[in-house]
Amino acid sequence: GNGPYSGHMICMYQYERGVRTPEPICTNAVGCNPPITDPCSREELQRCGCNPRLDQVFSFTVQGFNLQENDNLTFVPQSELCSAGRGATGVLSSFSTPTSKTVSQDRQRIQYHNIQATGTGYFRMCVMHQGKLFDVGRVVVRPSCRTPMVLSGGACVEYCPKNKIPIAGDCRLDALAMQHADNQALMIPVRMSVPSVAGLSLPDLATTDAERRYFIYRFTYELSRLLDCDAKRIVIASLSNGSVIVNTVFKAVEVAKGKDGEPRDDFQSSERTPRGLVSLFQALQRDQSSLMYNSPFFKHIDRDFVPVALPVRLCSDDTFRVFCPYSQSIQAVGTTSVIFVCLMLLFQCWCVCQCCVCWHIDRERGKAFSEEELARVRDNPQKVEPQLQIEYASSWLEGRFVGENWESARGKETLAIQG
Figure (cartoon, rainbow, N blue to C red):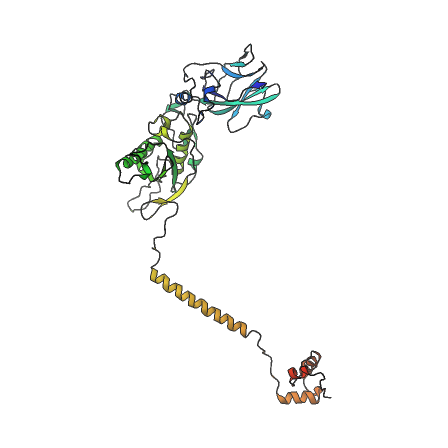
C-alpha cells in the first residue's frame, strides 16, 4: 500500500553516523524460525540467509511505496507503541536529527543521512507519512565494543558488575538483583538441543553413565563461566525430556562464620544473589550477540523457552524441591495412633454430654404446689398470696386446670366447673 513497509531490522553502533545494515528488509528472513531478533549478530544473519557484512557504514534507509521528502522518522523504546503524541515531527533525544534526506526516483527508498545514536538499547521505528503514523520495524543500538564485550563505566569489559545486566551490550542497573532475597535458592529450567547417545536421550541414561555425568559437569562449569560465579553454587537437580530440559538450581552464597560459629555481620560477597543470577542468565539468553551464544556449548539453548524461576529448598535427602516430602520425622506412628484414639473417645463423650443437656433442657423447674395449697385456692382464692392468685387466674384463662386431670378433662365435651 501507500507508505513505508514494515519489518525493517537495522543495526547501529553508538555515536556512529549511519547504520551497519546494508539492506533494512531481508526477504529471506520472512520464513526464518526462530526469527531474527538481533541484526547486529553475523551468526543470526547467516542463519536466516541475510547479508552478514557489518563492516561498512550506510545511510539510514527506509523502504516503501510512494515515499515523500516530508516523511519524518521518529524512534521510541521498543516497549512502547508508535503514537503521534511522542513527537511525530521530530526524533527522540537518543537520536540526532538527520542532516538531509534523499528520495529515490521510484519513491521506494528514502535515505536519512548522518543520523547518530547517543544511547544504546532496543527501539521502534515510526514514520509519519501523509498524516499517518507507521510502525516500520526495530533498531538495535549497541556500544562500540567488540562482540561479546559489554560497556561498563565507559570501558569495554567481559562481565558487568554484580548489580547490573547487559542490555544490548550496555551494562544497566538490574532491579531484580537489588531485591532482598539473598538466602532463597531458585530453580530455572533450561531447554537445550542435545543429540542422543546410542539411541537414548540424556534423561533416559543412568545417573552413573559417563555421557550424562560429563554433560552435567560441562553444563555446570560453562554456566559458571558465563555468569562469573562459583561453580559450587550451581546444582543440576534433574534432567527431563523435551529436547533436554536441565533443571538448574542457583544456591545462595554461603555466609562466612566467625570463631564462635555464628555468621559474621560484616560479611560481604562479590557474588550475585540467586535472583541476580537468574536475571543475568535471561538477559544473556535474550541477546544473540552476548557471551552465551559465543559458547560452543550454550549456542544450542532454546532462546524462546523462558519459564519463571521457582523458589526451592534443600530436603533431607540432599535434593532441591519446591516441597519436601513428609519423612515421618515429626512423631512416631504409635504415638500418633494413641493420640487419635484418645481424641475420638473424647469426642464421643462430648456428644453424649450434649445429648443429655438437650434432653433436660425443657424440664419443668417451677415450684410444686401441695394439696393443702390447692384446696385453699379452690375454696377461696382471695385468702392466698397475690402471686398465687395471679397464677390461678392465668391457668384458667389459658386452659390449664389446676389440680385436676386436665388431659382427661380436655377430652370431654362438657367441663364441670365448681363454684
